[in-house]
Image: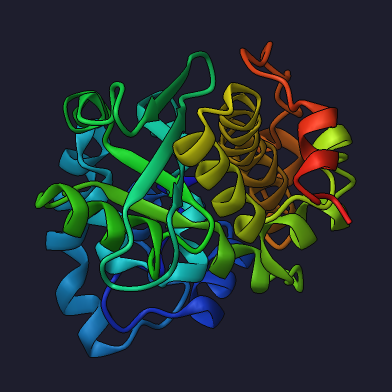
Length: 274
C-alpha cells in the first residue's frame, strides 16, 4: 500500500490522492510524469524530492513515512515493514509520574517475549532495538513515554498507534472494547483490566503469589498478541476505501501458542473479572 500512497507529499491531501487513483495513477512512478490531476504549486515543488526520498526510505526507514503521515494514516506502512514490527504493551503500578513498569509483552508475529520486573526487565532495552516499527494501542500517550522515562532511553522507532487508526474507522472504547467490536474473545481473561493488573502485581509482590504473576503475564501477553489481529483488521478495512482492497487485503493472522494461562481460582480469589 505504501507505494500507492501520495498523501505524504506536502500539500497533497486525501481528496487529491483519491482523484489520482481515479485517474489511474496508482504508484509513485506514474505520478512523476502525469498531468491528469492538477497539483498545487506546493505539491508539485515537493514531488521530485519526496519521491526520491520515499524510494530510499522504502528499504529500511519506516519512520520517514510516519513522520509525514497523519496518525490515522500510519497503517499504510504496515505490510511493507511487517517483518520489522513489534506489538507492544506494558503493565505498571499505576498512572502517576513515578509509576513503575511491572511487565512488558512484545510479540513480533512469530515470537512472544515477556519481561518482568525483578527478573529480566532490563533485557527489553536490548531486544526492542531489533525492530523498526512499534505497534500499540494508546502507546503515544502512555506506553512509549512511560518506557522512555523508566529506562531513560529514546525509542527511535516508527510507531503505529491503533487507537487513532481504529477511531478513524469508528471503532472506539479502549483496547478491550475495540477487541469486542471485531469479535475477539478473551476467555478466562474477559473482564480483566489495567486496574486488576495492579492488584495481581501487588499479590505477587506482597505475598509471593505465583498464580497472580502468571495471570498478570498472561493478561499482558494477550494484549500484545491481540494487537496483531486489530492491526490486520484495521489495515483491511482501510483498504476498502482504496482501489487496492481486492489485491492487497491480508488474511487473519494465526494465533500463537500462549506460554501462560490465566488462573481462574486466582482471579476469583482476588475479585477480578466481575
